[in-house]
Structures are given as structure tokens and as C-alpha cells.
View 1 (tube, rainbow, N blue to C red):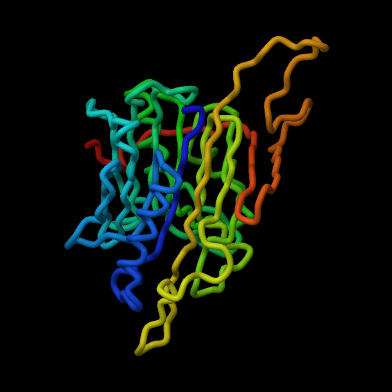
View 2 (cartoon, one colour; view 1 turned 60 degrees about the horizontal axis):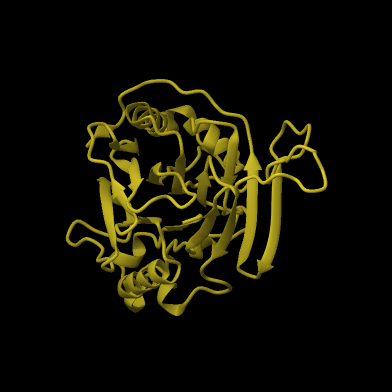
Length: 317
């Protein structure tokens, strides 16, 4: 395929623990519907599983799972198009905080030809911790474990194409290029979903709550889709009967990652081509946005690469 369909969602733990208005069952139904309607290649689902039962999936999808304490993520993939590598060191898990905030990443190989997409790709599913203060971004002590795990998988598999699908808990003031940089995603080309107000029901989805992101270091652009427009459905409006506390439900975020189009010889000009999202002479991050419907926008960005270090704060599985 010449594009990849991707999805990020954190219904939050209250949905399965409180389960008011049938939230768990309705969220599972919604997740299945999004997988099938968007024909998703990869999805990261946060806190919709517990230690008793795994999230059921439609026949065409499978998942890699990990947990840190009570916090759980499932990296879901289309098993008809992608196969996770079983090679030693090609998959890692870890916790971004002690016994909390899990991540899982691994190399995937296209089953039936890439059709314009990379034949091999490293995909990360994660639930990031919160920054130390409002408006700040995550620090070295919170991110080095995932960064080191990514470097280890890339070195082991010789794969440099990376997709991050995560609840990053980063404020809208932190660009996605900064996240790619501190994780050590290779290269200078970074594209991301637009910064949507996905978080959260308990704080009325403020404009700084662009926590959920999908970021890649390859491709031509992303068409972003916020899967819930306007008020969230009644089943997602979790309010605890005794405390009146509201659940921190996130809106699901999807995108289509478009691949590069093969260059063709110019017919009327010999000027060199400029990639989408890049302007001549621009060294800082460049962003292109367009809207084609109330629920869709496109973002492409370019940034410089960060550095990486080495540690052992992850597990090879």
C-alpha cells in the first residue's frame, strides 16, 4: 500500500474499572469499528485491558502487550499485512517510570510487499508520564529508557524507519519534533498528526491537551482524523457516583501516513524538486496544515535529529 493507517487511543482506566454506562463494552465496540472502518495497520490502545481479560480483537488483527503495574498498553497490528520479528533483540518493553508508564516496540515486516511503504518498520506503542510542570516537556530521566530501547532495536535490526503511536502527555507547547528528537528517531525528516484536543473529559478538553500523537520519520505527510467530534458520547462520560470525580477519557486520534511519490522528470522546468513540508533555506521546523473536512487535517514537519545514549532500562523479549 502507498499509505499506512494508524490509530492512538487512551479511554483511560476509569472506563474499565468504573465501567459506568457500559463504558468498557462500548469502548471495545468503538475500537473494533475504528480498526475495521479505517483498515488500520497499527494502533496503540492504552488502559482498555486489565489483568483478568485481554482486549478481544477482530480476526484480521493481533497484538503485542505489556504492562507496568496496573498500566497497560497493547500494540495492535494488522496480521494480514504485517509480521512482528521474532529475531533476538528485535522487540523490547520497559517502564518510563518505576512500575508505571509502559512502552513496547518492535520491528515489523510487510507480509505481501510494501506497495510504497517501507518493507520493515519499527513501531512504538507507549503511555508517557506527565512532565514535571505545566508547559514543560519530559526530561531525560523520564525518556532515556525508551530512547535507549529504540536505539537497541534499530541497531539490532538495521531498521531506521520509525513510527511512534502514544499518549505522550506532552502539552501543545511541545512540538512533535521535540519528542522525535529526545527519543533519537533518526534522520531530519519528521511528520506528525496535527495537535488535536484529545485530553480529557475531566478537564473539558482544553486547547493545551494535545497529548495523543502519531509521529514518523518517513513519508510524505499525514491526514489526521479526530474520531470523536464535539461532545463525547454518554457512555464515555464517566462520573463516579460517590465522589463525583470525572474520568479522564481521551478522544481517539487516527491518521493516514502517506508515502513518498516517485519523482518524475519535469516537462516544463528543470528546477530541483522541494519535498512536501520543506521550504528552501528554512532551517527551523516547517509545518504545513490544510483542512479538508471538520475532522481531517494534514501536518508535515521537518526537524533536526537529537542524540542518543546507552543504558539497560528495558527488557528484550
